Length: 308
Image (cartoon, rainbow, N blue to C red; front, side, top):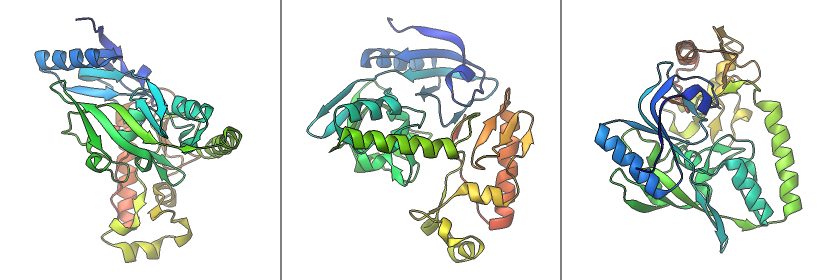
């Protein structure tokens, strides 16, 4: 085996939340051959596995993870005929920068989102009324048997902050993504990037977090849509969605703290790690948020962050 497998790697060092104990096994995968080796190792040892990008949108337990954490580090990038072929380990920041440098536009809104294209596609990440699924042409995966398969956009089963790759039972690992781009103007793109970064600075807490913790509310999917709309300001609805942060703040929870975990004073849909937060402290805040929002709005908030 050429793949290096490390024991007892501390996961807090590999996620944006800064929470998490040791992974029993940890491997950085740079090629399809290494990914196949990792899956063979999982099968041989009868282990569970978790695929990691830059570690945003995930909350690891303090006791760690008893299986293999596979960190994807495939950062290939090619553009041909207005399509970009991107390795799953490419960070969103790198993707934006390299596409803009090559004179293409469309992905500027991704700037400032901590994560990789693989993780972004799996969770169908979004910001500023965009979702990454709007740009996906196809996704290439490796299944648990080590075989490569390509899915069309439709086969990815995208939904709001969701795809087939986010399902718990899914054992397919995103290896490569094909995105559609448009020809752009580099100076104009640079201007857009600057504006977006300024907006993010105003809105996003500086402390460590997993990103937006709960999904926003898709209005047309509500069972009690008419009743809900009577309780909230209509002008807050954007793109058919209502911000979860507004609901949390309306329950008077902004700034609520348990230990070193806190509902951000800047944006109520962020739970932040003030220093050495524990997963149980975060879970207690999650419980309080969900109970209070349910009580006031008769609504079940759904986590966007993956909790292991």
